[in-house]
Length: 212
Image 1: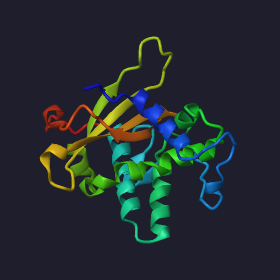
Image 2: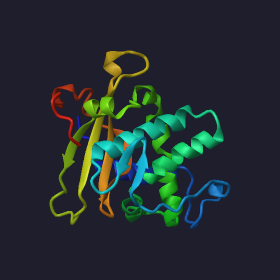
Image 3: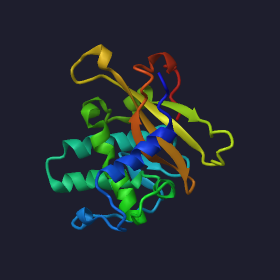
Image 4: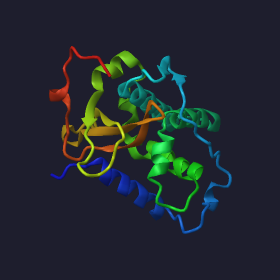
């Protein structure tokens, strides 16, 4: 089975933005009443995790996944906005914008990308840990090497999380991938999706390893 690479993920992401109804206009009128944030990549602290320049990809992924869980389970608009604030705080906004092939302005494009994180993985939010110690044991960092001759000098990696399907069917287990990149000196999230070639990462995790 062909591996679901980050390049394919980005292409599908951009295609999804266009398929959602974005035209050649520079603004999406459907965003008129939305809270369009202007994201500045900076140190932030959420859930007791200081996401500064020393923060690991696993710590950033944990914060993103926990915020997505809170977003999906929110019962009020304020709760959802608070969870979205955290997601935007961990977004690699400058990297995301660098891949903008639409006519949308920066803030609107970043909004459209981040706004799709929760719908992408919402089926599995009940499997997301709300404690760092537990999440750290389950998350796996996978180094992403730049493609030869691509001119891509970004420092990137993937963080994997194996989750069971809500149906409890073991054959429906999936591996969620959080793609991250260094943005302004901080590890931040570019995109979320799935590794289509794996159902489990248990054989890859060393129980004695807790590093990022």
